[in-house]
Length: 318
Image: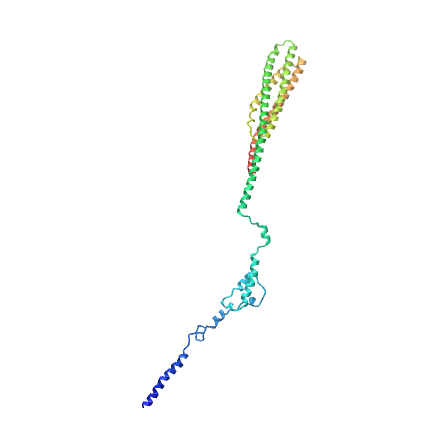
């Protein structure tokens, strides 16, 4: 009994050891999620195992940059294929220089100009414009000064001629009035012829004075056209011209009365009176022309104001 028990006990002790040894390798080891105990479904494996497009793997021809970039961006599984990185490097290396290099036409048409160079160009243009303006203003002032000087000289000459003519006409009017009153007291034709001859001489002198006055007045208008400044000359002779015309008309009336009173009696006196009458008609025409010239001169001064303002504006704008 004792021997049986002693032999049985070591068997019982050894059995659990064997069971333990056999059980330990039977335990499932800790495996990654891809092991047989935790299988990954097949559908996700198909999604992860995406195959590259046929255009990238099969064809060796290069595509444009957009197609190559879209096709050559692999996911994590594409790193296993050795040909894809090679395709990407060659395609990107050949596609990027084509997009980065500008065309020769664009470089020629749009030259690069710095801000300092542009400022210098603008400054040079402004300096050139200012120099041109200064030269034009100097030239304008020089011409204006010459025209103003000539205008003043003509104005003084016309005023002197006008005063001379006016004084002669006033004297002639006085003489004619005296002769008209004395006609009835003349007893002989000789005295009457002498008086008329004297009056005719005076009229001839006045006629020449009026002709000079007309020429000077026209030269005054011509000088006014050359000047730029507006001189107040349009109204200088307006009132005086009216007085001059009235005086000449009074003289002509006096001569007509002499002619009408003695036309039938005195032949020589009639001829002289007719000559005097023709002279006065000529003077009337001259005075009428001077009045028209005065009106035109007044219009010229108004037009000259507008022209001078336009000329100054054009000079300032240029």
